[in-house]
Structures are given as structure tokens and as C-alpha cells.
Image 1 (cartoon, rainbow, N blue to C red):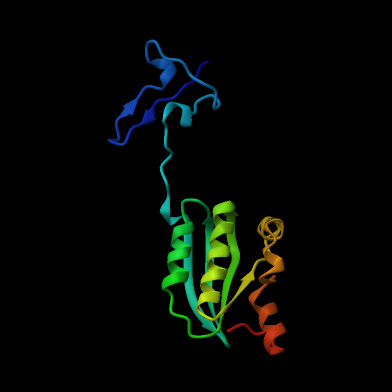
Image 2 (cartoon, helix red, strand yellow):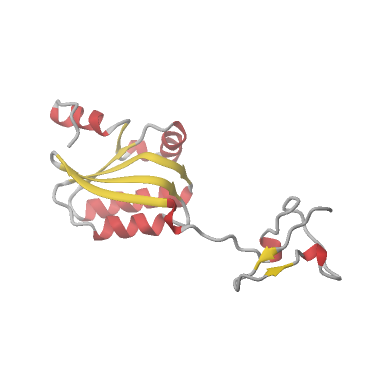
Length: 164
């Protein structure tokens, strides 16, 4: 294999990849990548998820943008758990979520349960096709209301298309 790159250790120093060290071999994760077999851990960008809170006409809203995954789901769970609710509806706006994995789905289930424990309803806002598909695959659309936009939610509840 050619083109193997070094990897950066926790101290910031560069070490040669396994195939460049005497007596070692590389097990395939693609050329130029040192994968889990070699003990490589990719750096985690904790800022990959941004959450803002707001209040609308009769509901509280958390607007999420970025990635909702194994690295960021605790941020959402903490926000849902700690955010004081002013109303009996919590809207999670997923319109700006670019990626979501099964940990993200688990966070949505946690959010639904937490809202129910606080005598509130969880409503999801999502219009991105891959996010809507994940919600449907998980069956969340059967137990949580899902709307394409916050305005669509307002139109259903208040007969108005003005959010907030």
C-alpha cells in the first residue's frame, strides 16, 4: 500500500502509520486512513450542533442546526431536560439538521418522554427528506406530530400561518 499518512497522537506529535513502522501491518480501512483496528480516534467537534430556544404563540421551541448524532445527542438531552417550559407544547425544529443517526432518534424519543413527564406534548418540525425518512423509519410519526414547518404547525393549531 502506498500513500499511508502519519496520524496525530493526543500530544499533537505525528507518528508514522502502522505500515510504516517496522514489523507492523495494516488492516484495510482504505488507503491513507488509520481506522479503529489501529486504535485511531477521530477528533470530535462538539460544536457540530447548535440549539437555540424561543417561545411562540402557545408553545416553546428549540431550533436545532447541524448534526444530531452520537457526539452531540447529550447536548440536546441536557437542553430538553433543563430548559424551563412556559407552555404545554415543546416544538423541536429539525429544519436545519444536516445529519442524524440512531442516537439522534433516541434523543427525540427521550425528548418526547421528558415532555410527557412535564405534562407537555412534543411536536417535531422537519422538512428535509432524509430527516423525515429517518423519523418515519423509526415510527416516530405515529406517536409524535410532525409538521414540515413551524408555520404549518401554527396553521393547524391556531388557524394561522404566522409562527411566533
